Amino acid sequence: MEQTERLIQLLNFLKESPNDSFLKFAIAKEHEKMSQNDKALKYYMDIYENDPKYIGLYYHLAKLYESLNERVLAIKIYEEGIAIGKDLGDFHAVSELNNAKMNLQLEMDN
Image (tube, rainbow, N blue to C red; front, side, top):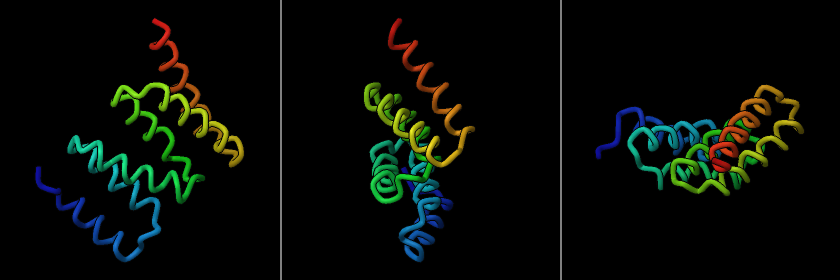
């Protein structure tokens, strides 16, 4: 599948700002839209390793793991995001991550 113009533009921006987590996140989302989960995961993991306080990462990385049927990893990522969200005082993110984690756990229990 061809890269979208948006993805090409984002990749060009990333060349200019190689440490920009927002750009990496946007690129990961574009790859997800094209069902290129391996490429999306690569960009998410780059953020995870290099900018672990980028709170927006955790929900989307965990959801990607869910879609890959990596539920234990998804729970781990939700939990890490919850802890970081608390440290950052981002209780909206904490709530969102908690709800997603509980929904996954309920699904796993059934």
